[in-house]
Amino acid sequence: MASRAWQHRTNELGDLIPSGFQVGVATAAFQIEGAAREGGRGESVWDAFSAQRGRILDGSNASVSTNHFHRYAEDVTLMRELGVDAYRFSFAWPRLQPDGRGALNRNGIAFYDRLLDRLLDAGISPMATLFHWDTPLALRGGWLNRDTALRFGDYAHEVGAVFGDRIDAWVTINEPATVMLNGYALGVHAPGDTLLFDALPTAHHQLLGHGLAVQGLRAADVRGRVGIANVHSPVEPAGDREEDRVFAELFDVLHNRIFADPVLLGRYPELPEFAKELRPLAEVDPDDLSTIHQPLDFYGLGYYMPSRVAAGSGGTAGPDGGTPVLARLPFHLEPFREFPRTGFGWPIAPEYLAVSLQELRDRYGKALPPVYITEGGASFPDTAPGTGTGTGAVAGKRGDHPQRGERTEVSDVDRVDYLAEHVTAALASVSPGGSAEGVDLRGYFVWSLLDNFEWAAGYTQRFGLVRVDFTDQARTPKLSYRWLQKVLAARS
Image (cartoon, rainbow, N blue to C red; front, side):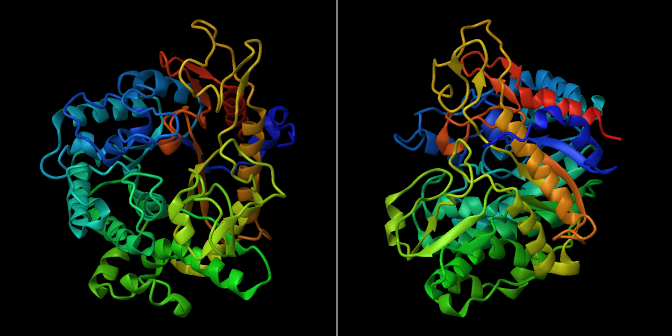
């Protein structure tokens, strides 16, 4: 990625950020907390998945990760010194409800009590996600089982009753599309099922769980705003062929619309060419759709990349690599060769973030509530000057890191440029005359505060503003951290 020298333009970006626009950082419990066997925490599907040989790229697991469970105070200090307005974290469902049902675990409550009190003392607004992929293993069948949605609604009410007086914003479910596609359709995430179109019930059950969770939070009289976070990928056909166009439309439905239309419009999209494949959604109970279609205070948009679709099997599974099940699909994803790429190989295309915002406006109109970009960021092979040692994708492997005591700042210029370009693209698109004018964009959350356990990629991809040494969990702010610190200080 060619540098646009944003590291030297902190005042310029600070001046562009509107008054009241919230800038935050985001994490997820399973990726950072560690303490997997402490305080009565139950197992999640990701614990079981990580224990299976060959599932995680570097053979690692998240039993320790960044050890946030024990080092949360240090991490809140990093946030306070960074100057962010808000912190988006997730409650670990298995830490609060080890069996996925019943009374909340007192030790889990105590941890989140400490974290929230520390955040509020630091003047940082908490945005809490109820579910970020760590389904309790005790809930057999996971999201294939309709009962999991009911259990999730109960869990939301219990959590809201305990923490509802201290949380400013609630996200019910994070990226249900990723859970369905990677976890149940393609098998590259937990629980590792390869059901293809037979995974569609997990989309409906997650959305039903979302609706029940909104009801549960409202019944608990939480004071914070309530929303959901979906990852959106603008989709285009790879060529001019009619079959490319048709399969691009199908992928748009599978990745984007079946997760937004029911929430915002109260109905699933129809695609006559694929009525057979989408039948599980066409046959749902109308009462379920009424439950899913709850009034929301905000809509969370996660954006990482666009998608280009071509007819015919092949291609890759996306973020976490290929799988033989792809040969059974009638379409595949084509690369965006015209764009530079992140460490994950994702195209760096900030202009498509503007497209995502425009599509939300055009599709949902007045039904679209205020929007937060709840995730945006990139992994890069970060390098530490003066050590001669990689600190990014390569250094994620065990033992490949600077010697203990060498805490050199990581010069991650690419991440600086990535964040600046995406924030400016988003702000320009919703400004008067912009392509998404009319969208009430309220904030941007950087993924992520810390390098962490990056799901099926293990420790081979680093997204953090802060470098973590996974041998001793020491934190070292990167150039991107220092840059964002100056940008936030420069806001008018």
